[in-house]
Image (tube, rainbow, N blue to C red; front, side, top):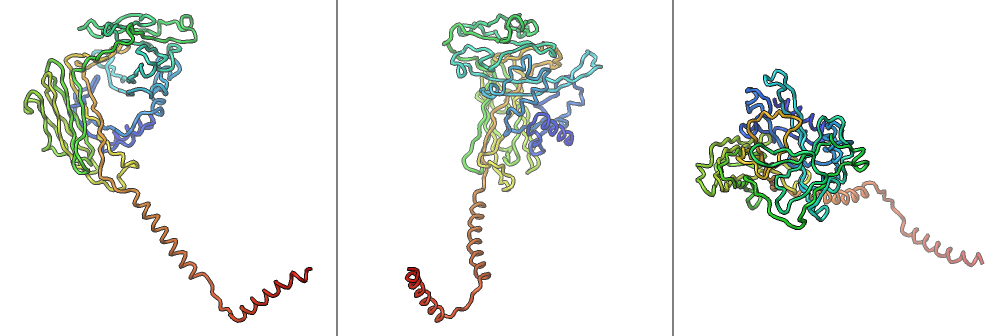
Length: 451
C-alpha cells in the first residue's frame, strides 16, 4: 500500500504540476474514523489500514496548477463555463480552493456494472464592493470575461443561483430572468434559480458579447449581519520561547441540538505532543460527558507524525476547547528549509460532523449525476493552519567564518608566496653611488648640447 501511495502521489504531481512528490512517510497517517470510503464501496474497503492521508501546508495553488486541472474539462477554457476561468481574476479573490474527487459508483442497483466518477470543484469568494464599489455584480466584473458559447462536448451545462434569502436586506433581481427554479431540498421552501446554457441562443440573442449574468440589489447601501453557522471553529498556537508550546482549538455549536463530531489532528514529528496534557473544556457539561472516545498514535523522529483522533459530543449552544501541549525538537542544520526563519507549519485540523440542519450552507444538486450513495450528508470543516517557529541556528555564521578565513588565508598566503618566490641579489653600494652621480651629470649636460 505504501508503494502504491508513493506512486500515486508522484503521478498526481506530474499530472497537476504540483509538489505532491514531497509527500512521504513523515507526513502521512492512516485515520480510522475521520475519513470513510465514498460512493459504492465494499466492506473490505472499510479497513482503515488501507487509507492514507497527507497534506502539504506550505504549498499554495498557482496558475501552473490551474492549467492542467482545466485541461481535464471537456472544452478546456475555450467554451462553456470554463471560459470564465481567467487566472488573473481567480487568484485575486479572498478565498480560492480547487479539488479533484474520484469515487466508484454503480450504474445499476445490483452494482454489476461499476464505473468511476471524476468530479472537479472550484470554490471562490469574491468581494464585489472591493472590485466595483457596489454590491451589484455580473460575470464580467468578477471574471473579466463572459460565457462566449456553450460547450458542445458537455451533456449538461447549468448555472445555479441561490435565491432562498432573496428578500433579505431588500432583495435583488436577476438579469436575464432564470429558465426555471429548483428546490434546494424537499424539506424547506428554498430554491435555486437555474440557467441552462443549452437553451440559450448565443448567435442571435447575445451575439458576440456572450452570456453575462447580473445581480442588482434593490437597496444598494443596506447591509446586515449574515446567518451564523451552526458549527464553526477557531484554532491557534500558544507558548512563549523556543522550547514548549501548545495547540488550542475552540469549537462552537450554535445549534439547538447536540452534535457529534470527529476531530483529527496531525502534527509533524518535530513538535512532540504529550498526551497527558490533553484537556477538553466545555462551557456546559463536564469533559467526561463530552469526550466519547480517543485514538492516539505517537510520532517517531524523522519517520512518522503524531496522530490524534477524538470523538466528541458537543452540547447545544456551547463552546468546547481542546488543549494539548508540545515540545519543540532540535533539527539538524541540513533539515531546515531555505527560509527556516519563516517558521514551520502545522497542518489544519479536520472536523467531521453530520449537521442536523443545513443553515448557511450551499450545495447545488447533482443534476447530471444522481449517484450519491451516501445516506447522510457529511460536512468537513478545516481549521486554520498554524505557523510555529523552531530553534534555528545562525545560518549567516558560516558565511562570516568563510569570509574571515579567506581574508586570513589570503594575507598569509601572499606574504609566504613573496618570501618563497622572490629572488634577492647582492649589490655594491659604492658602485651604485658612482653610477647615480654620473647619471645626474649626464642629465644636466645633455640639454646644453642640444642647443
